Amino acid sequence: MENLPVYHGPIGKEEGERRLGQDGRDGCYLVRNSDSVPGVYCLCVLCHGYVYTYRLYQDHGVVLLDKTRIL
Image (cartoon, rainbow, N blue to C red; front, side, top):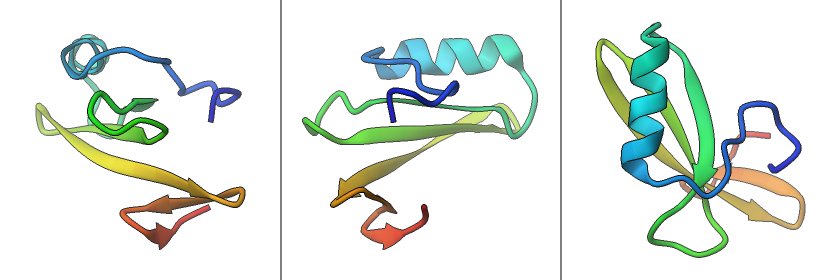
């Protein structure tokens, strides 16, 4: 994940929401480290002024969204 241009590192939820709010475009997104679950990432997406957060898990090189394969 760390090599993706959308990866913002170990920033908190509030900072992620602030950065997306600054961009302001629906559909803009970023990936950050989870605050509450070590080793898990969060995909944060701005939609109609609200930030939706989805947990991303890695399992043997495969990225999973809430345990469903996505990449």
